[in-house]
Length: 250
Image: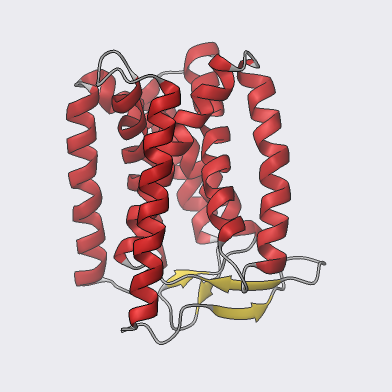
């Protein structure tokens, strides 16, 4: 049972006047994170390809927007989650650009890059601050740093699985892996912060074939605008489900 939706505490990680809080990781929360990963995948590709910005310009744009959103979330997150979820999506779009740059432009091996980024995420996650009573890390700058690295990992590892199989097979396989790791954490280590980040790693990876399967001609072939519209609608529907679940209580 969740005692409360938000746990707030004055941040010691910054010189700004932030009220850092944590969000309990319920089932609707994880599904929303997963769908947000798919939307971020679509938006990252949409920026780079359809707006002709290129990977570097797209990344810089998403990082500027993300910085504004993260600042707004750190200041106002106890009042509204709008900045949080928008930042999650835009941050994932920027991570998509970086992941593609690493593998497509720098030609780094997918498996090697995945291993390095998984280790980097774990190291960054170990520095996050656990929140008392909600089985979740505090949402501060350390949280966002770990989330970004996990997003880059998700882009590359999701592509690795898709290239080794198909977009649809990767969509099913990583989706099943996400359900399994969520169950495992709840069943065996519900308060483990590293378990939280293990789920983040899997859902970041699972979101890549979700977005690509909807978009790619090797999947449903809907194209980026339609795929982005679908993942946006799915995210909004999931957040509405989450809102209603919160209103209903434990």
